[in-house]
Length: 227
Image 1: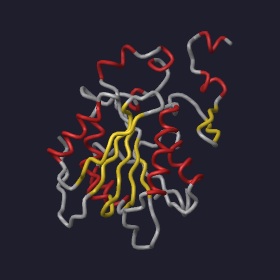
Image 2: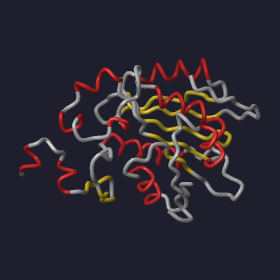
Image 3: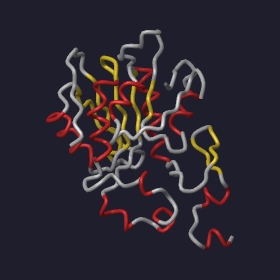
Image 4: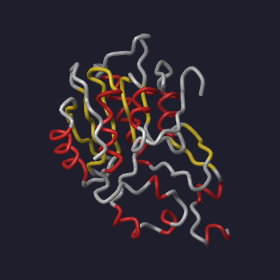
């Protein structure tokens, strides 16, 4: 009770939390998965099953990459729901600790090629951090929340690296701030010619929260840009 009075999140008090059909172990400051991320997984599963357009890898397997794993909720849930998918712990899951902002070349060399890339990246505008509820601001990892001045710092790097990681027609699935979809679409069109902004999807409350971007079929190399 005392821990709850200090505004410590219930997930950290009971040390676990349900995500779709999984129960995840939780401890601070690991980012607590939200219902919107469950929607992201559902969206991705439906899309992969109904629009299997991406080319598979050389071994004939469809491989997915999650950037910014946190609790592992997305990857574990996808593995549980699609046993035929590899998410590049042993044969079906490989985990790498890499900073996508600082070591993009390593990301490319270790993680490609993949059929799909999914991420719930840090996407809050930096100025919005101080207005967060105490349960979030005091206990959760700010690095998993702060997306920089426009909330797009990590997202831009993911999309810059994506053409080198994805197979032809492979897709990126992002959870974002409701203000982001038009900004991301314009940025992709202006900066990543190998990628095509497919559509924006809304969450259960009608907010534009998910972006789908697809790699065009192209043999051109894409030079990494850290800006």
